[in-house]
Amino acid sequence: MSVLVLALAAGAAVGLALGALGGGGSVLAVPALIYLLGLAPVAATTASLVIVTLTSVAALFAHARDGHVHWRTGLLFAAAGIGPAMLGGTLAGRLPQALLTAGFALVAAGAAARMLWPAPPVGTGAEVRQGRAAAAGSGLGAVTGVLGVGGGFLAVPALVGALGLRMRAAVGTSLLVITVNSLAALVTRGGALAALDWAVVAPFAGAAILGAWDGKRLSAKVSGHTLRRIFAVTLLGVAALMLTDAVL
Image (cartoon, rainbow, N blue to C red; front, side):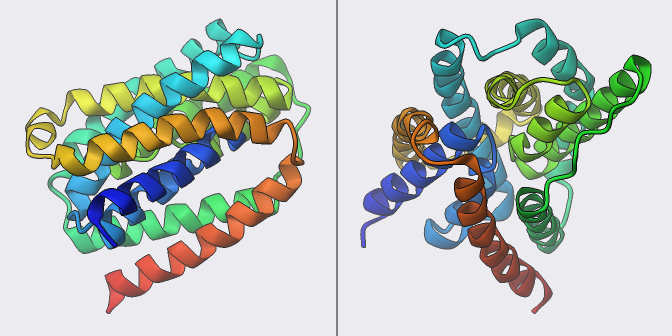
């Protein structure tokens, strides 16, 4: 199968997940770029940030049009992650590739677990909720910077549990958070951007953008519970593959 066909197919799958779930698609982007398209882990995380940024912007407009984006809340949440995202982006190029692969495997497994067994919202005071939102925003930024994932699987539960957003609003708002954090991480990766194979990244990103629009439509037809379970099982398989590769 040609590289172009693989890039288009993988991009469509990533976009579909991101548009339908408001996150999680980027967790598939990195392993697809490494194992299907042959990129090194550092290049794959950089390429993933480009793809995630473009796809999130496309999906964000679709959700904003339907009134499902809380702009002020999303920007405040994202602000806590800008510094950690930039620091993580700088750190990523200095970490051993095996460590990056293992770290990504653990993040993928954590994302799957969060989707299969979501934590119930905790009804605490406003100051506690804001503190938890700030902590979640900082952690999300660090994960985005180091591993090249958008982190919607962390943002959506935090926006629901800590800030009290409804699920549809949390999905839409998480795309704003992902966009801001991904851009912040990319600022520190200028050299890596120039070295990317754009013949792979461009079709991947284009297919992901189109897939995100389809994902949003899919979310209106298929229950979120069903989508999350299917995606979580896929992520567990990806995590097992990457962890094995890192250890052996």
